[in-house]
Amino acid sequence: MIQKRVALLGIYHETNTFAPELTDLGAFHHGFWLEQEQILDEYRGGHHEISGMAGVIEQVSELTLVPVFYAYATPGGMVTKEALDSMLSRMFALLDKSGPFDGILVAPHGAGVSELHPDMDGYWLQQLRLRVGPEMPIVGTLDPHANVSPLMASSTTALFPYQTNPHLDQAEVGRKAARLMVSILLEGKQYEQTLLQLPMAISIEQQNMAEPPCRGLLECAGQVRAAFNLQSVSLLLGFPYADVAEMGSAFLLIYEKGNTGIAQATAQLLAYVQPRLATFNGIKTAIYSLIPQLSELEKPVLLLDMGDNVGGGGSAASTHLLEAFDEARLSGMFICIYDPEAVKVLGQNPELPFSLRVGETGYRVSVVSSRMIDGHFSESTPKHGGFVNFDMGQSAIITTATGQTIMLTSLRTVPYSLEQLLSKGLRPVDFDYIVAKGVNAPIAAYQSVCKTICKIDTPGTTGADMTRFKFLHRRIPLFPFEYV
Image (tube, rainbow, N blue to C red):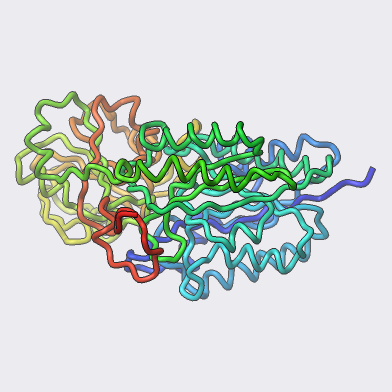
């Protein structure tokens, strides 16, 4: 029996074009730079989309999975030319060395932007398509925060976005993509996909897919899929912090070749969206309007710092909430702040108490206790992002004279796991307020311990009101910038 060979590869970055720092080659090496078997060593049996892909293909005796290349960096500013060139050069060298192939599974994010290629994912997927030819099946996954371009859709056979936010279905979506590949290679099925760009960009505050208004979009998608016999109708929330032409929300429709109902299906989806545009704009609660209400809320309270959303490219270094709580004489807060310089100072074991500047503005705190910690921790259960291993770099935990607890890290770290606290001897129930620098993603980790959840419209490069940002390349008209 001749084995059919399936390659597995990906370049994954969510790019915030309003973030001042570029994402360089070092950011990918500090994230995940995995080649060949390293990919499966990291993800086999886990909760990532690659875990799901591998789990399906490796169970099919007629297929051989060939891991090629996967690179990931923490969300941040534009990817440098050097970084993208280096990744593509290495990926294609390994692809050429490992071939030939009968199909390719891909794992892009869908909201990547590089210095020379605003549609970074469309560019590298197009280069892949040109390299392997028009007949090669290319099937993959996307983050639902992808800003999907026509080039991404035309360069691939089928792309499946996760359909939960927080993202808890990554492995299942990876399995779905792999099963479609199996049907192509072993059953001779042929598929096409259609991208429907919507006349809106959903506010990050409204992007919890288990709640209205996004839940209604998913229900409509399910009805359309069933009515028109489609393989898949997937919602793409979009990523509002990328000034690119494809920024905005969308649907992706996947169907067997020859389906004649696609025009009607897209019309039905648009008919659902159009009269509901205003529901996708969010509440945008400011810090100082929330503080008077805090004493009445059941503790612990999860404070979602939307303006410094690390998973959206935030700096992880803002101190707006810390300053507001100190000013209001509210204590009992936990907050994690990226500040490698402060960590270096603490590593010198200064005599207590002492004054320390923290965060991007150098906010001064009085340190009454401190300890250095190992920045590594791991997560064994499905959480947003599907990550297992985390690295905060050299880190420290301090308490301040105002009664706050601050974790200071040397690497920007997404708040996707309770183990960030538990593994360092911190109990969430011991705090009245826990700040998580995110919007929807941290909920999966913290909802089991936090009695109340508040989304706060803080200043920053991921602020909830996208209309405050200066866009030069977005589509026009597009809600909420214009009423469509």
